[in-house]
Amino acid sequence: MGKVEVISINGVDLVFFSNDHNPPHFHAKKAGEWEYRVYFMRSENMLEAKWEEQRMTGKLRRELIELVVANRLALLTEWEAKVNP
Image (cartoon, rainbow, N blue to C red):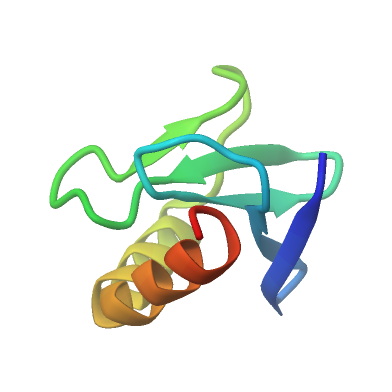
């Protein structure tokens, strides 16, 4: 599966997969711990755990949501350019 890395923050990789599916999202991954799909155009239920038993901390969850909300347009632009051209 092709991927285009967006950014890595404090050991968390934020990744678009170039051959991914709608709706627009990216993957937030902490190696060996968890992976979430982040549906950045939603206002609710933005984060979806890929594996139910894995959880990120509440602080990191809040920080990620704040980052996404502040950068929705840029994320959509990346999605359109790299995933859904």
